[in-house]
Length: 167
Image (cartoon, rainbow, N blue to C red; front, side, top):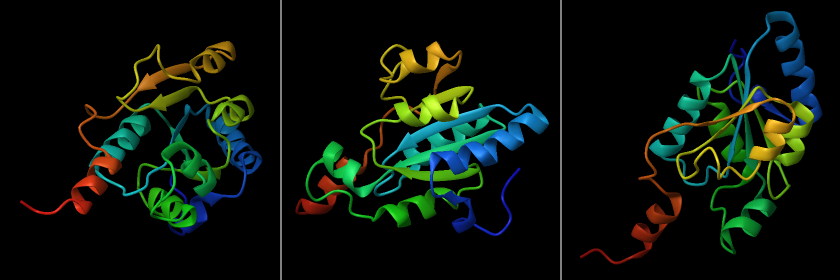
């Protein structure tokens, strides 16, 4: 169920647009919808494995990408390095991703309450009990899934290595 026309057409303007697209798919095919989210600044193999793992839980994978403003609030000044529209396009370019939206909120609670995905996927830096939005997901009858490989990759660590002198 991949969208023809490339990555750019998979980036949607709002959660309401995602609901309209995904709702039509879910109703017609009884598809499992999964929401994954992240900053995805300095995209690396850990990001790919997280999203591929989320896609394995889904018929439809929606990815919410933090806006530049929410990234700065979360990661601090100087981040993100890559603008939100480019990060969204990179994520949308992955074969495992169906839809992408950029969000300004500090977390995906509002998106979860509106979209009500069957599964909320988080990376392995969380456990099923430490996912911040866990209560929201359980309240509407969804489930939380931890996907990807062990947390051995980090954009922050990559940036630190780039800024330190070579031995």
